[in-house]
Image (cartoon, rainbow, N blue to C red; front, side, top):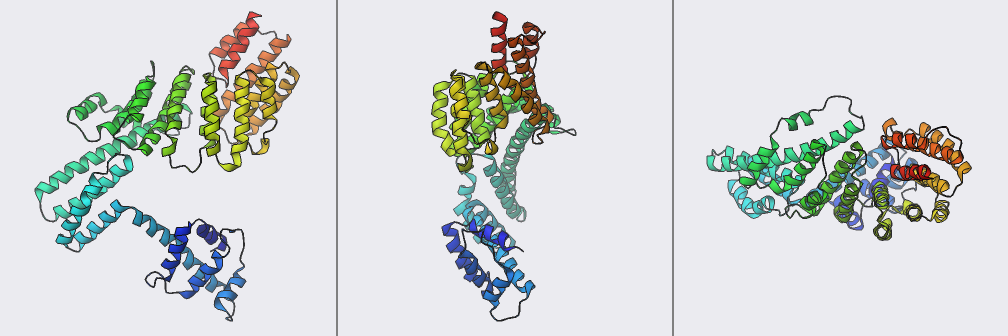
Length: 481
């Protein structure tokens, strides 16, 4: 067992947890080995400088004093402290979960035959578990486990009235949890199928296809099923993907999530991410005609981001919002977005992303020299959006008439894409198409191509390169000149 592993674990403790863990180690119920406490004190002197390495011989000398060095002995103490730290974290987390604590205590009372204790504690905690306010999937799961605990109690006592009541509640919980998970899985598999990542048959779609959902949800509404409003936005997104054609009523979808008083902020955020994926891939499959709907879905997600559990705003989320907003000409909104949200990015990337954001905004406003000026300040080696950056640079060079520089960049860009192992062939396809069409664009502009601009544009219209709207606009300019 390595001290580096143990020190990284200790360095993750908060100030409050550190004090609590010291008391935990001093409790004879959990630990009776004083040498474990000594090791903890030694290591904590170097936290948070966890890079400090300790040789086992040095630790053995400080803990075992004059005893002869025994590697297994010091490794045993390290092992014991590591396991105690893990046990402390689990215990601390468990103490925070009142619902799980109450359920476990009821199970213990039942197992020991302490009926009076069981019923008394049930009166104290039952309403807390069953009526927690806003409904979300993890709460449904907790309620289902709670109902199972009550069923075990009443089954042993042949109390049919309570047995059937809790069976009904459990059934309601399990149906809701099952449908929410299935709708989420359908979203995942629909997306995977589009990206050609499915290796075998998946049965989620087969199960959902066999259900008459229109009739089912009509029954839910008529009978006031308690999870109806929770399921409604999931079902709406499922129908969006299932139907696969026609317009997208994005305002109705947004309202089903943002205006839903029956679900919590966190569940709303989760639903907004699912909606973004659904609308985005529907848009891709439809030839990119739902760009405005994608933007509205992303706006909802970013509005609800405060309810996410992420420590930092993900750079992929940030860059997708930036890109789609500018594609829709939302310059003022984008400027406000950049100022408000770039500071929420991980510290190591937020400076690069701020520069990139301003470069992209400058390009969208037609200030191409300013765009290249911003772009030159980015640390390219640590910048994650290398594909988008090259696309932006190429487009700027074209707009400025620097065609030779652009052609040179196309060659190096192609080499980069073909050797990049992080993207699948499907994901690379749009970028390679962009290079093909911008190469045609430049050669037509220079009079070096025998291709007809109208024919190339028609081919472009029926394909899905990156920056498609911009490419179409540039081909139209050539055709008109």
